[in-house]
Length: 308
Image 1: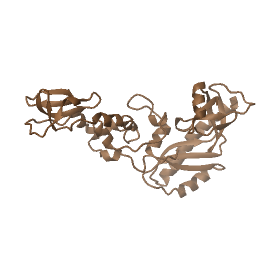
Image 2: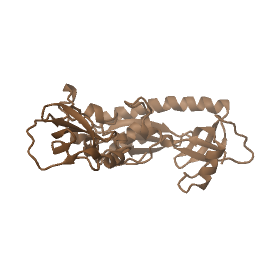
Image 3: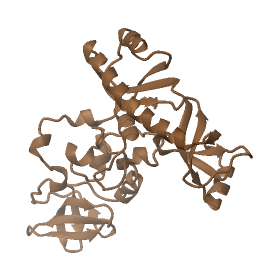
């Protein structure tokens, strides 16, 4: 396997190249997919990656190269891109005309112009029979596919940059969406604020799962916040935990806060006359987040349909 193409959701597919076709890195090719003929850019695959890929049992099925694109084909591709924009707004106008509760996301037309796909999100199932009838009259001699996707799917195909400054995980390397809830953020001591723990899709950040197991391991042996402990300097109460450094912050009876390694303190059943404040990290507030229900950020049936 020498060449591959970057296809749906930034997934690389190996190319099956006929012997009579000469390919170069970065060349545009016409390939046959389950959606029809698509124009994609071919990439030369590193020899080491190629060997690993050939041994893999989970690699995508190869796409057959029909031919390389000519100058005329490139002009056709530009025309199709313009047609997709026009088709998008025509469909959007029909959606509004039929007063359907659905958000049109993207329009894609295959290179052979035999199929046009409209991606949309919707909170509930949509009866689009009347819409489909109008679309068949508007776009003749073409197969029309109305595809319901989730809000996470929407973000993955539109692409963009996350709050970390890197491309969205879902449009770069993430293939499947894990179920994410607010507990993941709480257990990692993150500020429970929508603007801090949610992504562009309006759901909790996918990256909350990446280091969760490390935090769980780090939390083992740590006393709960508010518990009474005995330290080398006397009694106190745990006021916050430093998971990654393995240290516990303890408020002493004299009011001072000191940090101790978790192995150097011991929980005791004693009434320590110390008042502790709730950690600031878990009480972040923002006026713009005041009216947002945190539960709305958790995954539901509209998060992802896997129907991209």
